Amino acid sequence: MGRSRDGGAVTIGFDADDTLWHNEDHFHDVEQEFAQAMTPWVSSEAALAMLTETERRNLKIFGYGVKGFTISMIETALELSGGEVPAGVLQELIEHGKALHTRPPRLLPDVEDVLDALSGRHHLLLVTKGDLHHQQGKVGESGLAVHFTHVAIVAEKDAPTYRRVLDREGVAPERFVMVGNSLRSDVLPVLEIGGTGVHIPYEFTWAHEVVEVPDAARASGRFHELASIADVPELVDRLAGVRRR
Amino acid sequence: MGRSRDGGAVTIGFDADDTLWHNEDHFHDVEQEFAQAMTPWVSSEAALAMLTETERRNLKIFGYGVKGFTISMIETALELSGGEVPAGVLQELIEHGKALHTRPPRLLPDVEDVLDALSGRHHLLLVTKGDLHHQQGKVGESGLAVHFTHVAIVAEKDAPTYRRVLDREGVAPERFVMVGNSLRSDVLPVLEIGGTGVHIPYEFTWAHEVVEVPDAARASGRFHELASIADVPELVDRLAGVRRR
Image (cartoon, rainbow over all chains, first blue to last red; front, top):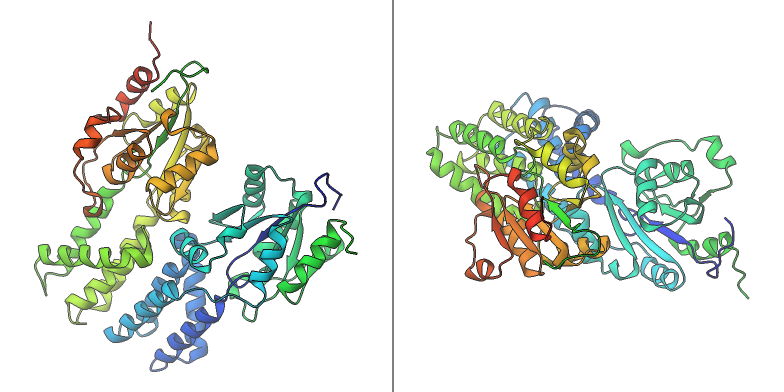
């Protein structure tokens, strides 16, 4: 990353779900409840495998987000029970879907301090994919919006999308660092357009997001793995060529 | 609308659903199918009233869009049948929800010609609310994206949202004309921020969007009602102070 004229200021993009606040843990709990409710017909493992398969099939139609997940649960329950699933179970699945929407975001450790420290010296973007209404609601409830120059909620986090978001912000990919828990969505497409990708794994990873790190990514010198968001400021300083005294 | 230095160019915002392409007619068909399927338990009228009530209740949680509508249909069917609704009917409701997602947009008459004529002389924005994945898909499939400087997909079309969209485009509300079928979403909030609102009614209006035109809106001199999108170019010329020779 080359030095800039504005004292090492760069643009840092942050993913939201499972990077700034917990998300997948609640999905994981709901999936377990779903699997448990399906045991009259199939094993938990089989129920989860069928749900994942329905989700994959429906992703093209519904896109990302809780509402598509909720419909996929109902569809799978009807299918695997041969239509025998009681109405009460379906109503519970709908309630789980609503709870996934309405539970306030619980911030991950150090998030507030890190954003506070970085936003004074750099431009911060929030780049999140999924449901517009839901993501916008969570950003508002999180109280974190104040730290970001812009919040981009996008349908898919691929290379063309990142290019479009950075174009609109007038930011060159070489001056962009993206931080997130998903290699597939936060890191690889950013490396592809010439930016820097910082991977911070979360406890759970949705099956859809699981990928290997290609050797080329490691070889690029623009791929970094950190244990915690608390390590981001030091890395950014190092990348931007700022010496701390 | 004052004259501008760039030969009368203004920024024209277009709504999408029921302004550029048919939408509510398909919802209307699905609602009729839903009501028909509920007749073992309640009258069609009662079924539709309950569905509208469920939708209203769920709107805060789910936001706009087909997926929330689909879940609301399932929830209402379970409730009004006392859990007796057959699995096959629920599966059909899910299929209706998918069909609402996947049917390619059917353009309204004259849309293509009007956008083609206007985009040469003015800046066109697409401003649509609802589901990001679905709206983005329809914009792509419509083939109309090429006419627009920017496509803004927003969670709610209220005055702060329009202000934010125009700010980002560097457009003064006084130089902005919004065209759409919904008084509530396309016209009133735009009048509120000092812009011009053009209402083009569609055959069906979703219960949620039905409002009266306040006297103040008519008195503003910035409210216009047209029978067809084909009348927009002439109105815009008149508003922008361009004389056709």
